[in-house]
Image (cartoon, rainbow, N blue to C red):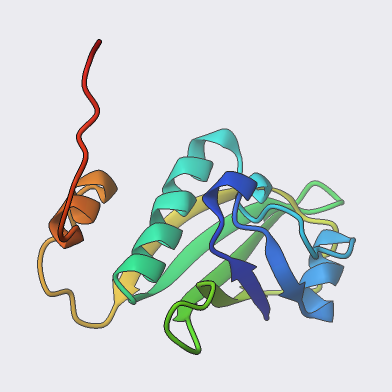
Length: 146
């Protein structure tokens, strides 16, 4: 089990991670980037999933593969849940990362293989920039060309 900070610039760093998650990766994960665990191809997708989980308050389940220390492929399941205890507090996510089989250690090169959202979706999920415009209220500044 772990908790992530919703900080895109820092790669969604771990606030805290349980001993089993730290054992899977072979180090203490506090303040390390969650999205940096993924290969370049999957990194953008996992960042989009994290955005939807926090902004739409939907849970997400994902299938992940990683390479183990001995070179074998490990299959894992990821659960991400929105977590905000009170209004105007820093938004966080809580999650679980569990291998399907065996005792794997020192995993690397995470790849996203599948994902789905759980719960009610009020509408079709739009790209992130359009979702932000849909919830914007009041005065808006549009950047222009000089």
